[in-house]
Image (tube, rainbow, N blue to C red; front, side, top):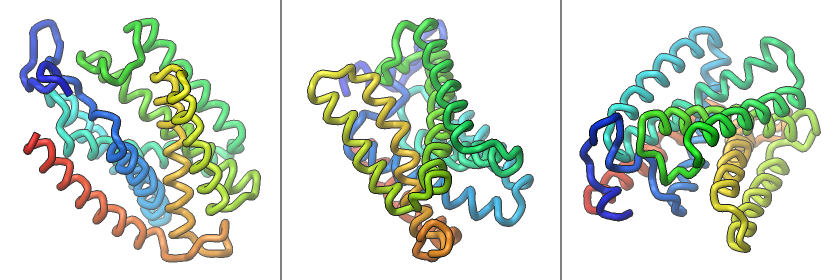
Length: 256
């Protein structure tokens, strides 16, 4: 990151001097996948107790986290990743509600969320002329960014459930499939494909990959071939690992 982007002061006319998102590194993808698995396990655990209360509570926490993130003037690891984690939890609940409560098939929700994501991206492009995460230097671009992130979580949730349940693959085969699929945009980028398009493709695929792994660990063998450790156990372990990862990211940002 250049010195200009690392500056932590705001400028006039609603602009930030610093970019509001992290550099895309191996650590970025690792923590992103971790949050997707955490979001799946936490959502399922809370929904099993009281779905309505869970949606309201996590929605409020998401708004609080997003408000915290929007008030920062540059990338802050704790604010950013807490917001991503809350998007993962709430986004999973919202996506699941379309099937569980409304009875909409996963194939339909997958198509529907694909359209929603396309609409957000087109709107963002027509408004700003770029979809690059390296250009998140104004409040409006950041709002577009978080709207896109929420849409990718909803789409990824629907796609993961489509393969695991509708297609009958189960959790582990789904995880393997998405694990291989996420390599495609990486290879395509290396071969010269557009960086922005490959980034958002990979970003969508992290959601069903992490969720499939979390479901495989938490769900019983009678439901998708899981190992049966329980959603609660996976949730606690996920938060513990995330806390360690965030501590490392915060320390690294201070040292830098």
